[in-house]
Image (cartoon, rainbow, N blue to C red; front, side, top):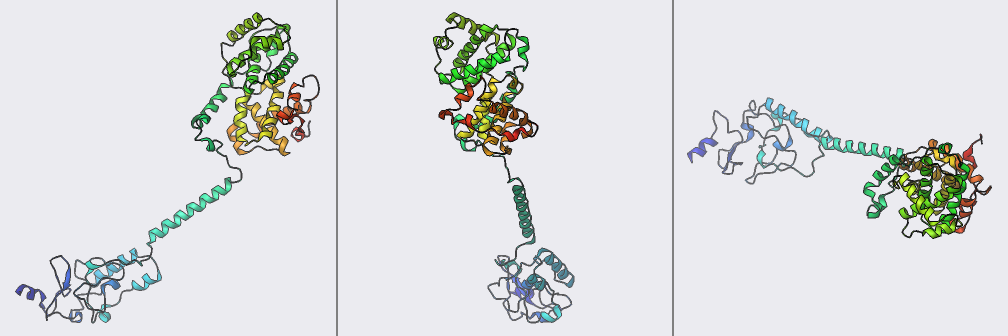
Length: 437
């Protein structure tokens, strides 16, 4: 073992660097022999003190290598001089979090006073302790996340007063609600309502009828619709067909009722499952027309309208807007009462169907609550601001005030029954009229 003796011998009054030899596994183990010397005999001008506690221990190195209890040292691959020790200390100080314990442990002890009776541990056997402090970058990340959470909470508090609700959330699993494209459908309705637009002054082209005759016809058809127990969609389509036909076709006074009866027949064929027979319509009109006259007028109307029956009426918007307002039965009946009053009035043709529906819901809400009420959710789904509804809403209040007076009382009688919740007997919201009315 001459080679081992040479490696463990003292050269020029100095021992080998660590007093250790490398085993077969590449680790440093304590050299066994009589020539192991204390570190105090090493030239102190060559070896500097390690800058952190894990490199210095008062105990001697045992055969089973000791494990460092503190932070890991940087592996040493060159002689430890004072300059090298200072570089290691600076790097260690930059990597450690700024705590009181690390500040104390980072202090470099002069090698001249502290290296006596100490040995250097094997740096390859270091195992980190579980009681280490949290790294600084983790603390910064946590602080940043907390700040983001705080900002999001502040934003939620700002909009928590009147948020826009998802009115279709509860029906996402209902295939008949078509939640996936319900918004697209109503966007299409808003664009297509212009196709069913009726000029608000079309009566100027009629030479034998006027707007009052139109109101009498619509009021009578509302009663016929109620007597036949037809669907609500049928009434709104009937009125639309009449107005669109009268816009382009001159009609004499004695044929106006025939136009109304035929329009209801067409609307029933489009909307109803069970359609009233022609004889029933003739009977309800006091046999003023024959079957042939009704069928001839039917042909004339569908050709004049070019068979276009698919137009958005106020009814389709009413259902959506009532849902946005989270309506109950009372609000629903009052809203339909107000909008049926508008069907009779010729001057309401200047408003598009979607605005009529939104104004009816808005006026009904104000009627029941006693103050102006229009939520952000209703504003979002109707696309109308409260200011845009006021003109139409004030007219509805006026119609409500005089609903039970005059000759056109069909809507008032209909909504004065228990079936319709006595909606006509509700006190109108006069405060919407303002001081000028």
